[in-house]
Length: 477
Ligand code: GLU
Image (cartoon, rainbow, N blue to C red; front, side):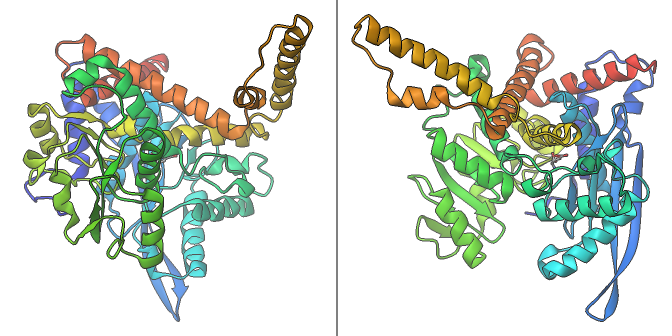
């Protein structure tokens, strides 16, 4: 979906939303400007010999705010990458990390490349070369700048980057912490791949626990039975759709991809659809629903929850008026433009903003970074000790029941669940759930507590900017 040209750029859109929020704050003179601007953006052009010729690639790493270091944010591989986009995304990372209390400044990187055009070994050469350029300038470094996956990148690229760093810093004992989102066997953490989608699920659960918020969205009840439209079945959209439909009873009635959409009133089997798309490259021909060639129009259909999980700017001045969802949760970064945001606010559509909605990724990245620095997997010390203490209680209860001939037994299901100590996956999910709940509560307090704040995005900005300002204050700025 193309964005109308009368709209501001992505970075301007983020700035407009920022400005709207700071007008309601009492920041010291000049601090507003200091927080808003991007500190630095590094542009690199490098050549790689491929298929008998030298191809030149352009990449960026933008550092928005260094109020805390390292700075953090993904690296995106896409032909649409440009400086404006990378800077907007870096700014969002600053606010996102502040909101969920991940102790990082904000950064983002991007490389103009279509990964589908290259073989695996070619992508490895391109990624390593880009990483080399960033590593030698400390724009990848465990203490200074820690990238992660984003659109077009995943575990594989992160493993190459980590390895490249280790080749260039052979004695850095904390080298694995130079990048997150790595595969488990290269220092990754359980639950990182699903983290952003899982975070969307936890964010929605937090929203539906907030009666006042649910009322503001003109909705009732819980997530159970809410009809969902998802745009984009990439890593984030796929996991969010899968968890919501399989675990929360929220049927996903529509999945929109760039090359067509599927609609099924009874709910789509997400696992089957994902497999079909992986095999055929398109949703066309999938038997579990009706196919539509022009998927973007389906964004405007009746539903309870709309989850844009693909590109920025997909809900803009050209379609915002026709959006019928009561609740939009921004799984992607920047899917709603500043202009569309205003229209939707007037329509009383509730938007759970990107900086909160998709913060699950960086939250689990934070856990991975801590794991790498502590050189031990979460749960390794406590798990069996926890299990043996639980076993003690179960044995004692069973003894009492036998000795006093009280006729009861523990159900096998309870016993199995209670006796199992928490491994890394359980601890990561618990930490993510806690983070999403606390961050939601801090936003909701502002949303419901201040008369001049009528939407969650402004509440999120106020909360995040307040934390960044406090951190500058502590440094004497
Ligand atoms: N690329 C993800 C984001 O936009 C993750 C960033 C990270 O884990 O550092 O939030």
